[in-house]
Amino acid sequence: MLGARYTSRFNRDVKALVRKHRDIAPLGEVINLVLADTDESKRVLKQRHNMHSFRGSWSGSNECHVANAGDWLVIWKIGNGLVVFQRTGSYDELFK
Image (cartoon, rainbow, N blue to C red; front, side, top):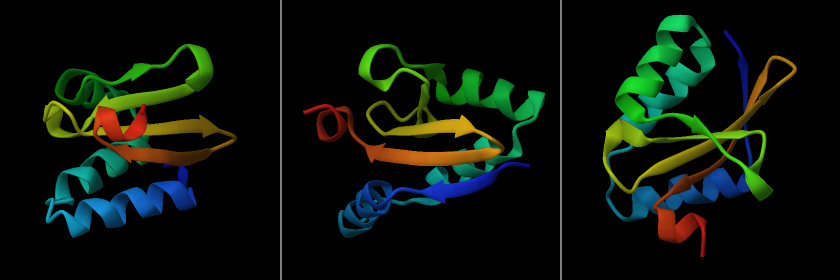
């Protein structure tokens, strides 16, 4: 299991979701799958949440759709046994 760190921007994104009355339980599921870092959890992330790697300015980071719910994304980076959760929200909120 990997360790976790949440950027201040990620924490603000989560607070914004809560203010919008979004059920954040599916986000917790994705976070747990990422932290588990097993072959099975990676398979679930790819199949159920459409996990993939970024290119360009977000190179080295991964992204998935929370519960494959269309426009709710989570972005994170893994390094040195630590997952840094960078952003969460809709495509428009993250890539304006």
